[in-house]
Image 1 (cartoon, helix red, strand yellow):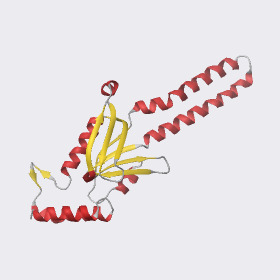
Image 2 (cartoon, rainbow, N blue to C red):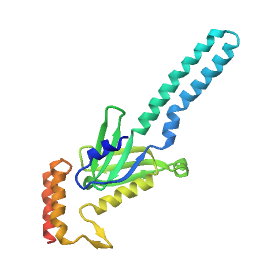
Image 3 (tube, one colour):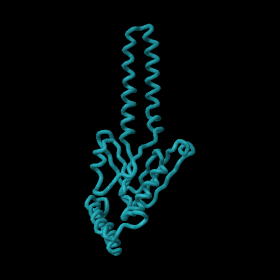
Image 4 (cartoon, rainbow, N blue to C red):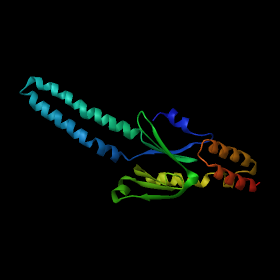
Length: 206
């Protein structure tokens, strides 16, 4: 995916923590039939060409599974899962983009499941339970699900404060934190109620 498109979605002071996709098994299972079909066409046309010279034009049929496979590869490559220091974002679509994101503040629980083969080949499902309208967001068969879950939980824990050398951000930075929250409120990522509650909590620390 174009880096400029991703960067254009990020808010002020928002940064990407992790980017991943579905495991390559998903892509392989999508194009396996097309690969077998292309090989069958090549064999059949090669045999037919020994007896019927015009049969060589049958090789054009190979373009059908090849084009279909390229389409599947582009779909897989453009289906990404991002963890930022504020949100979890799911982006899909080659030309028409579909973006679904969940604020880390609204994430209530994260569940991960891996099958026996998932543990061997490092893929699994990550289910995010949120307090937003989405409710449940399920990411199926993503690569390195443990790293994805850990990155998300760490970002959630650090949201609203930062640490440097094991010490909490200085109180002088509280106005900056409130300004960042206000930007989130303006973008609709944080509700007015959440903004006021967090603002009150930060001001109480001064």
